[in-house]
Amino acid sequence: MQLFFNRTSPYARKARVAVIELGLEQQVTFVEIDPWTEPAELVNVAPLSKVPALLLADGKLVTESDTILQVLDSLAPNGQLLPAAPAQRRDGLARAALCQGLIDASFITVIEGRRPEPLRWSDWVMRQERAIARALSFIDASFALVPGRFDAGDISFACALAYLDFRLPHIEWREPHPRLAQWLDDVSARPSMIATRPA
Image 1 (cartoon, rainbow, N blue to C red):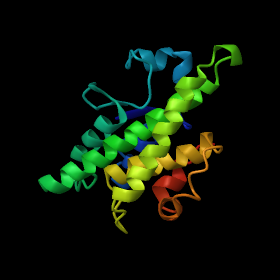
Image 2 (image 1 turned 90 degrees about the horizontal axis):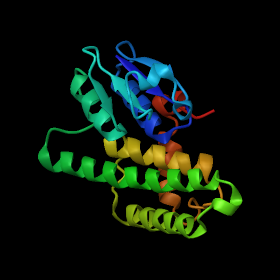
Image 3 (image 1 turned 45 degrees about the vertical axis):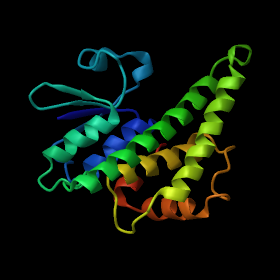
């Protein structure tokens, strides 16, 4: 299998963390690539030129980070990212989806900020930043951050928070959410998170 990724992409980081957490490093070859340049190596297998993109051994393409996590989990001998118990599985999927939205809002903010100043849509950026603040408050009030657990929802959340620190340091989320900040600091010591830090 091949996993196409970009080192700074929070979406691709989710997939890379999952590969390591599931012990699939020997089965997956990481292919670092710049999707913005639409390289032939990527678009020939993934026409959207987006990362992550997982090319399975049988040639089938899997895109979108949450779907890739589910597929990787199904391929691991002891899949653990999505529990089999229905209630726990729903909880993991719900947390992962909300955190995917948190990543989306952050990524949109970053991309909009790269446009020439006269072309930037400040109201759109402000809307995304309000969404980020609301999401963090909601998560802080409602998520159970279980020690020792690192499932699909936790991976998505860790990558979302780390992306805020990396790309949007002006959003000072740590002080109003010390519980979340401490959790991120704790899980950032996991080998999978250390190995996938953006550079």
